[in-house]
Image (cartoon, rainbow, N blue to C red; front, side, top):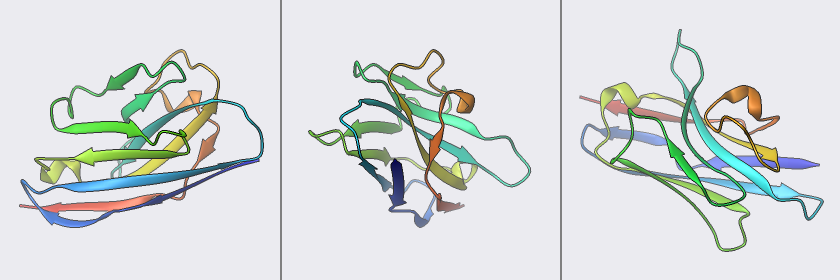
Length: 124
């Protein structure tokens, strides 16, 4: 059984920063690839950043150089440091996990475990 709980969302002005956290609770010793997704109203869910069980990191082009994904040393906490935020970053942000490797790290269909989401709002 896997649970994901996000925190750290909020409202910020353009150019500001936020740090999202996602706590992973699991009942096995399995390793999980994890990712952050976001979804704005009327838009499809978009992969933002992902880290697989080999620590390979993938970013969406729209956030490269501004966002940083990382994990705690025990890999039960996932972070997303978001700098230089823009109004177009406004969305609900979701943490996701998949057991083992994933083929397409920013494809939401690769992940079966999802958090409830945390809202990020960036004002101009």
